[in-house]
Length: 103
Image (cartoon, rainbow, N blue to C red; front, side, top):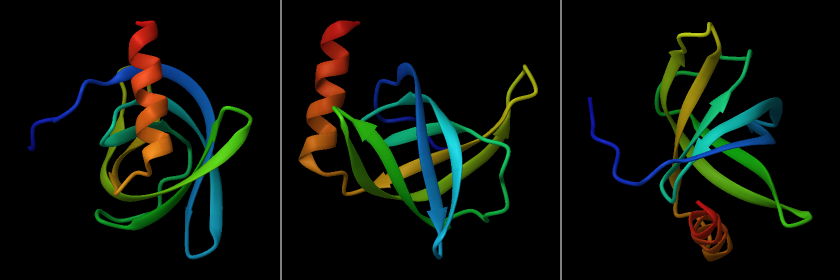
């Protein structure tokens, strides 16, 4: 199991993710500069699936690219995905830095 490389920020944020033009809704459970943890009922991808992520940030939607890193079931029977981001844009990094200042 790989070690996480960035501090995770707990947050609840509606989002969409998908592959090959099919999208699903999810809730961001926590996020960092390098990844996003998403709670969702739809889990049909395989490890390393490439995903397109639509994340609402400051009254607009950021489009991110990511790779499915893991599928999990939490202790509260919530299912979810760990998504490793691929080259997140500076606007996303700035958003994470702003969130860190509020903790």
